[in-house]
Length: 153
Image (cartoon, rainbow, N blue to C red; front, side):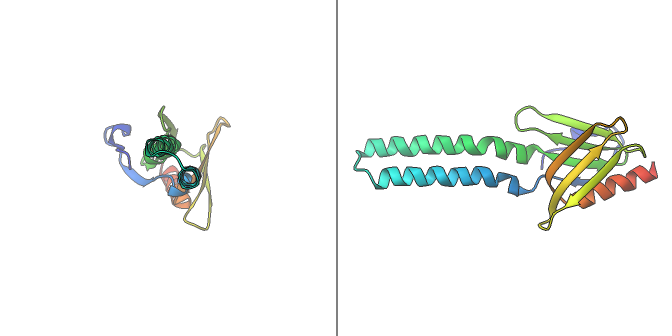
């Protein structure tokens, strides 16, 4: 999980922390498997020189790396925090964005928990703006922690 200390204000403490579920990588992994299949078929069913086979493997590996890079960065850099003052969501694969929502009674945090331990979290601010995050591990726990801190404040 990414380091969260830099997101916290002095004296602020983390009550609940979670991240995205690894299932966000399934699309990229399926793409990688398909590229591997194509590379294998090209090499296995054509009588090409060894140098061409190496070029095909290298090109396939490059495309596989590009297919995995962005989803992996998104998964590894995304973190959701409930502190004693606010809800923080750090997202983004390349350009990081941070959502900060104060935990008061006017902001609403809700969750739809899936059957596999992850779900969707919806954050609705008092001014009507809303943010929706899918595939959050422990979505119910995140929403409950936010509601509990909101009641305390």
